[in-house]
Structures are given as C-alpha cells and as structure tokens.
Image (tube, rainbow, N blue to C red; front, side):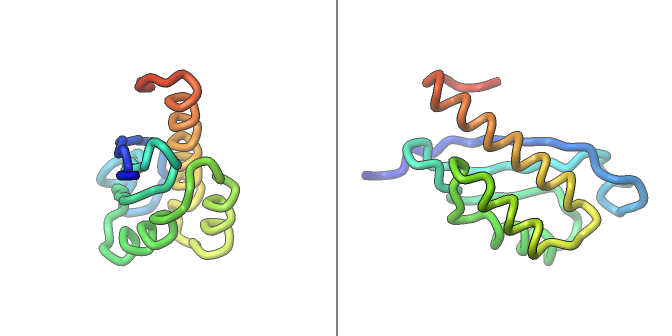
Length: 109
C-alpha cells in the first residue's frame, strides 16, 4: 500500500547562548509521516549547520512516531548538541500530535 503522507510539526524553546537561539528562539521540527503506519519518511529542523540537520535526519527517518521511546533513546544516546532537550521536546509534540490525528481521524491543529 502506498504511504498516505501527512506533515506534522513540533516546536520547542531553545536554550540561551547557542547560534540557533540567536536566529530563531525556538526549534522547529517538520516531519513527513506515513499516516497509516507512523513511519517518518522525511524530516527537517531549524538547526543552523548542515551537519546538525543531517544528523537529525539520520536519527529520525525510518523511525515510528508510535514508538516515541525509540526516538527518545536515539537522541539520549547519540545527540550531544546544545539543542538536545528542545529537539526531544519538539519530537514528543510531533508524536502526540500524530496520535491525536490517528485517534480522532482528523487533522490536529
């Protein structure tokens, strides 16, 4: 079955003193997700450097929003950038929003 793609976002406040904070104040995470399975098909975030954005993508693409703990563990064990807590928070928001969409069979706001 072809994926039914939806776009889910999450935002979180960034810590003071990092470059991303100077530019954005919040981290934005955008995920393209297969609505039927919860699998993350593509991802982006508002981190500043190419390396950070690519590493973020590597950690989340292929993961499942129904299994947030797996995503959390990846960041806990592998990501040691200053925006770690903000990314984890934004991803949790994405997971919760996805579950709301599935449970209520509508688009979350």
